[in-house]
Image (cartoon, rainbow, N blue to C red; front, side, top):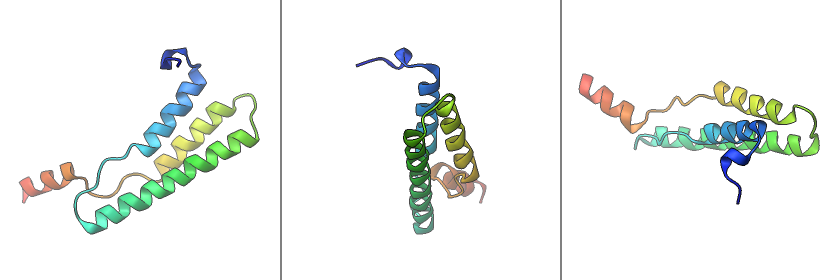
Length: 95
């Protein structure tokens, strides 16, 4: 098995973009936050799957960087808006 440092920069960039897209904070225990977390994870997973499918069909020069950029752009378009346990504790302290 190769170490991460053995991977080229563009592969590492693509893998990092994928991890960043799918690594989301857990939601609060409120049902609405859990639903939003699930929906956001579904959207981001679909975005990653589609970007990788396009990459596999159309590999080429710069394709890995373009795919990583596309995933990051889509992730930024769908930010986390639900409440996390950390945020709900912060709000409770202020009330």
